[in-house]
Amino acid sequence: MSRAFVNEDNAAAQADQPVERQVSAQPNYVTPSGLAELQARVAQLQALHSQQTARGDQADKQRIADIERDLRYFNLRLQSAQVVAPTSSDQVRIGHWVTFADELDQQQRVQLVGEDQADAASGLINWGSPLGRALLGAKLGDEVVWQRPVGDLCIEVIAIELP
Image (cartoon, rainbow, N blue to C red; front, side, top):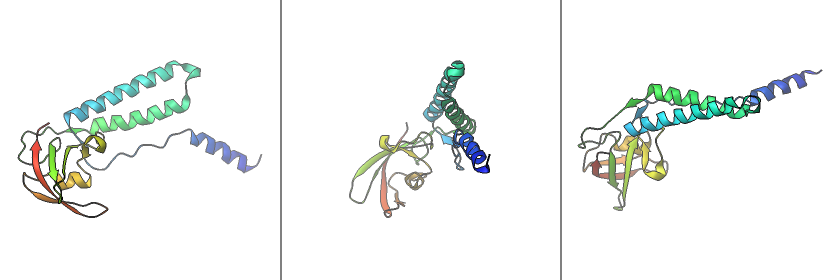
């Protein structure tokens, strides 16, 4: 048997192992609802893992490997979670809803959340994103610069609300 066949066998075995999910280097600040979402995700993955392993020989080995990878990731995120609950609305903090206006007076309302909870389409913005960093620490009436790839935009904080 040539070495080419041996290497193909090794490559096939490695292809079954999913690529690990990268854990962010930034602090894992989460809102109370973000923590609940992480806990629910871990519970859901544990249930899926139990269902798959209970199937014995009929289990989808690739699916189990993917679930185990996701469990490792979300367990790490849960262990490193630092819950931030804003107590006042005088300065933008993680968890606050912020309404801001751009130079054309177009308004947008977003909530600063942890990265696992972020969903831009729902207005949930990662506190470590360019917009999140621009807003974090701002006060009512402050003008801040949102550094975007398409160009900087000056925005004004017009409302800060507790969740």
